[in-house]
Length: 231
Length: 218
Image 1 (cartoon, rainbow over the protein chains, first blue to last red):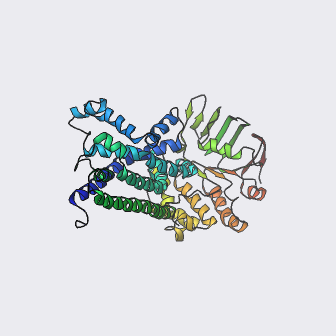
Image 2: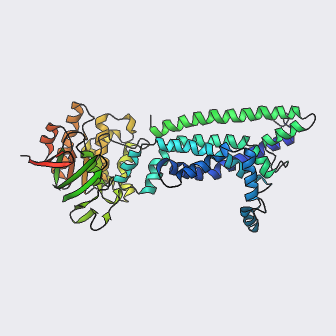
Image 3: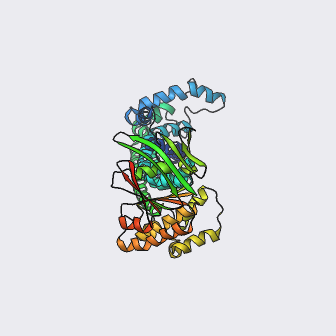
């Protein structure tokens, strides 16, 4: 691989993988919680929550990046508090992970929500008649049965996080080695004379990574479904 | 043991107002579809809440509008056997059988489990998944699962109606055994006259949300 890709290209690819990995892992518990709540409960403000979750899908990414910068920048209401605690997110790879997580969250929640909705609510009632409290029903019945959707949602979110560009470059800029992810690197190579070739290589890689993630999520979801349903 | 029931539940297009006692043995509830049979046992199970009334088993109040008591389904110790067995598809038969004990933190005595398994003749399917069972086997596992959760009352909602007549003959004796050997009330919903005649110790007919008649079986 080192013959084919230059060090700076490898750096961008590895950074993208790191950012996407952490974005997916850290947002997964929230994705499961929000997906479950949206699938199973009626409450005032449900549409507001649903709208907020989906907002990054509809807003121009640059707007999401701008909002993140205003909130999490060192002058922002959240960023200044974090800075007191010694955590700086703006212009660092953790900020890139945050931006990627927020942009990927709608995809993750949508897949998880649909799979919770597909779980037969009568099985949950049955578990309660057998003495399960709500937490036990969730851990033993709802979550295992929704696992195929959780897997799909995570892989889609991972693929989306690898490709995130607009919000990331707005929020954390395009710093080599820190926030220059794969898409940012493609953008940079396009701006410099003679960078076309590098851009092409990264484009091909991006296509391969995204396709693999999509195929893998389909295959894994099917596998998990088979195991869960015991066919 | 006995279960005493007296409540009223109003739904937009339907009103259910019943009062009856279910002693140990099988109390059959029959009636046409839409008479409110399933709604009635959902109320007993805690899956639906009546407007007012009182439900108790031997001094343990499950629901009382006067005392403002409404136990959650998991606190009622009521075993529910459904028309479709509703086994958990991701668990093996043995895990399905054990889960009620696990939820209630009851001791996992191998001998208790073995006794029920032998009684229901399901020892050869313990490691299978529900999708690999026949209809009759599924229903036997469902009965075993309810029994192992050590219920104080058993509710059965048309437990045989999705089975063909051979499978019915396979399951009926198990309900007779429950009736004769377990000292707990079993509320058994069915529209099948033969089933009711064969099983019931007490028999009520439900029409338009009201109990019309108590019929005594020999």
